[in-house]
Image 1 (cartoon, helix red, strand yellow):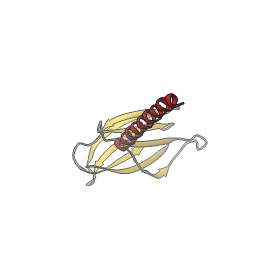
Image 2 (image 1 turned 135 degrees about the horizontal axis):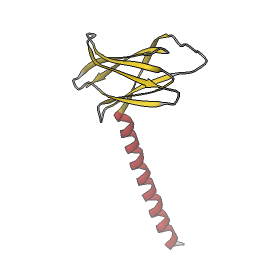
Image 3 (image 1 turned 180 degrees about the vertical axis):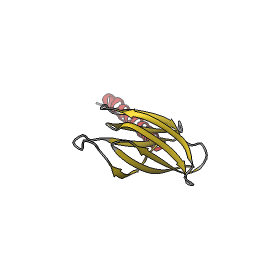
Image 4 (image 1 turned 45 degrees about the horizontal axis):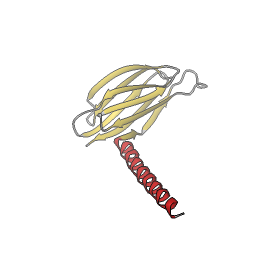
Amino acid sequence: MKKLIKPILAILLFSAFTLNLYADEKVNDEALKKEIPLKYVKYTGEDRSLSSEIEVWLDKQSMNLILTGYQLKDVDIYVLTKDGAVIYQSSYYFGMIPDTYNMEAPSFPGKYYIVIDSPVLYAEGVFEIK
């Protein structure tokens, strides 16, 4: 019986240590991405029975803005400074299947606005680069 207790104890300690490392790694991964809350200012959907969605994340490691959405059609994306100057402008088509679009985030510290305009919805968000 004593021979069996030592290996079981070793396995339990090893698995607890491994799970702790995995949990720390996952927390650090989540800390690298931050969701930018969006305010839907107006909704001009042509067919309101279809749902459309957009999410924006700031990836602090790659310094990219990640847009995930679907059923938005042609989307115009703008990043503005706090003074209202457009520093980035792009267009992307989000169809029926969820898709992701990456764009470079501003490199200078400050407060920025993101504007998403499509035939289906209009959304604005605020984010900060430190």
